[in-house]
Amino acid sequence: MPTPIVIVSDALPGDTVAPLKAACDVRQIDGRDRQALLAALPEADALIVRSGTRVDAEVLERATRLRVVARAGVGLDNVDTATARALGVTVVNAPDANSVSVAELTVSLVVASVRHLQEAGRSLRAGEWRRSDFAGTELSGRTAGIVGFGRVGRQVARRLAAFDMRILVHDPYADTLADDVHATGLDELLAAADVVTLHLPRTPTTTGLIGARELRLMKPTAHLVNTARGGIVDESALYRALCAGTLAGAALDVFATEPPGASPLLDLPNVVAVPHLGASTAEAQLRAGHEAVRKVLAELAPLLAPAPTTV
Ligand SMILES: NC(=O)c1ccc[n+]([C@@H]2O[C@H](COP(=O)([O-])OP(=O)(O)OC[C@H]3O[C@@H](n4cnc5c(N)ncnc54)[C@H](O)[C@@H]3O)[C@@H](O)[C@H]2O)c1
Ligand SMILES: O=C(O)CC[C@@H](O)C(=O)O
Figure: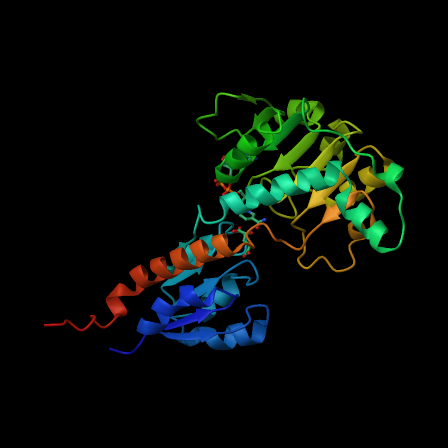
C-alpha cells in the first residue's frame, strides 16, 4: 500500500506533526507560494492549513487524490467548502482549540483601546512623556456589545463581566444565552454599547455587516474591536469614522486583506492593530495541530498500513 502524502502548508508546532510523520509522507511547503502549492497538490491525499493558505476551487480541482482538508483552527473562510463537498473532499477544523486564546486577546485589545496603550507606548519609545494625552476610560459600569455569541463570544462575555461591564449580545442563531447577558437587535446593541466586539464568521451575509450606517449608530465615545475576520467591517467606513471622531477607537486583529499592507488604518493613533494573533498562543496551536492531525489520520485510516502487532 503506498504511503499517503500529506501536505502541510502553514506552520504547525513540530510535536503535533510527529504522529503524522510516523504514518505518512509529510511534505511541508509555504501555502502563500501559490505555485508551490499547486505543484504539490496532485499527489496529496491530505492538506493541512491554517489561515495562510487559500484553498479555492483551483486548488481543490488540482488535488485529484485529495480526501481531506484540515484547518488547524476555526475559520473556514479560506476554504471553498462548497467545491470541496462537490468533489467529495472532507473538510475538518478544530472548533474549540483557540477560543480561550482569542477571548484573552480580545479583552487585551479592549483594554488597549480604551487606555490608548499602543499609541502611548509608541510615544514613550519616541522619547515623549505625554501623560495627559493618554487619559482613558474605565470599563466598570459600562456596556459591552458582543456580536456573535458562539465559543469565543461566550468566553469574552465572562471575561468582560469580570470587569463589571453590562453585557449585550446579538446573535440571531444562538439558542441559549448566559444568565447575565441581554439579547438585543444589532442596531440597539450598536447604539447602546461603549465597546462593540465581533465574534461571528465571515460569510457572504456578514461581509460588510458593520458599514457606514452601523458605525453612525455607535456612540462617538465607543470603541470597536474585531478579532473575528476582516471584511466583516467596512475598513473605508471605519477609517472615515475614526478620522471624523464619530467613533473613539478601534482595535483590530484581522484585516480584509492579510497582510494589510499600507492600510491607512495603521497610521491612525486611535487604532490598536496586531497581525492576526488571536490563535497565536502555544496552547491554542498545540490543541489545533493535534486535533487537525488526529482528524486527518482518521480520514486516511483506509490508506494506512496496519500498525505492526507485538507478541
Ligand atoms: N483572530 C483569530 O485568530 C481567530 C481565531 C478563532 C476564530 N476566529 C474567528 O472568530 C469567529 C468566531 O469563532 P467562534 O469559535 O466563536 O465560532 P462559533 O461558530 O462558535 O460562533 C460564531 C457565532 O456567530 C453567530 N453568528 C453567525 N452569523 C451572525 C450574524 N449575522 N450576527 C450575529 N451572530 C452571528 C453564530 O450563530 C455563532 O453563535 C470565527 O468564525 C473566526 O472567523 C478568529
Ligand atoms: O491560523 C491562525 O493562526 C489563525 C486562526 C484563526 O483565525 C482561526 O480561525 O482559527
